[in-house]
Length: 225
Length: 207
Image 1 (cartoon, chains in turn purple, cyan):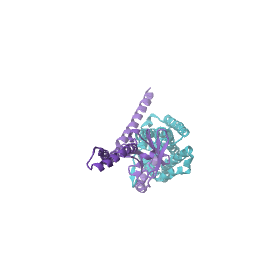
Image 2 (spheres, rainbow over the protein chains, first blue to last red):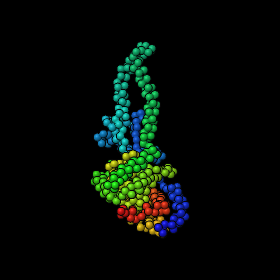
Image 3 (tube, rainbow over the protein chains, first blue to last red):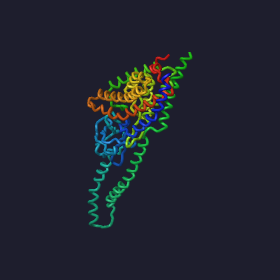
Image 4 (cartoon, chains in turn green, purple):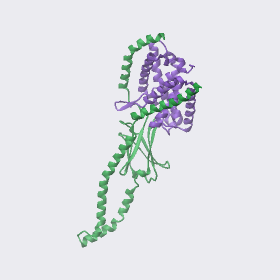
């Protein structure tokens, strides 16, 4: 090739220029929309926390969040905050039986679903236990009044009130553990949803080499025939 | 520039699969035994380029490199990009299997088009002519892919309307970067392995 030696010379002169230009571009490149969008949701106490992000450091800010039940009926709708989070009390979703499908819509053809399975969602115990707790107090408080007037000491009937107090304390203490578990779950989900690891990328290249190996095997066999 | 699963309508997905299959068939027909390693390497390049995110400030950008694939592989870019996209969707849930056909056409068609039409100026002996052609091959492939994404979104849902073209604007920095990287790669190959840029070889006319 007569032209290649000439171009090779000038090409080596232009090499630093191109390299500098590339590095310069990398430095001034504006943020662009990454095309993978991640969303995950977890239950923290009596709330569902939805988090969306493009990359580890780039949250899906003010993206629409949609909650659908197993039948595809919309339960709730919201928008992520500037942390890419959307928090909704479970009670706001109404009565849910099966899984909840949470969809994050980021526009430009980007949306991602996350299925929050039914067993992760606590049954609305808050309401049922409230009502069940509200039922006994009426007779108990009456009996407390009556016992107070007769005897100031602790009576058997006081156990109702005591039970309520203990329940409240246990609930308060449990809240810490629930929050902790929520954080733990978030951590696990973040790990599972993190970007491609080096080993995955190398694994993918391995796949490509394998596929080509298979094709080469068959093509080679045809050739040798 | 992938389209996620569940966004496009069934006819668009079916058309994507039909066009993708046609492109891959042509590519496979043109693929000779000798070109296999080259196709494999470029499939790997395409696969890895979109995975390596370079963090810049609060965001991250990544290369796509369809222009280089089209320039070096011609029609064989179709199977190479299909393999890359399939692995990305299987291993990392990028895109998805139902949109695989559409995504392949979106990425591979501009690459093949520009790779084959700009082949002549890229083999020009004048340095600046080559540079311009290489830049437009790299940048143009990303630009046309963006236009195709916008068109596909518009075909599916009229509500997307012209806002769909924001995807093109969002990729402008990547286009410029891709153009410069393409100049760099092609000039490098021209020095090292000029036979890789041979017109007949790229077009698959070599016997």
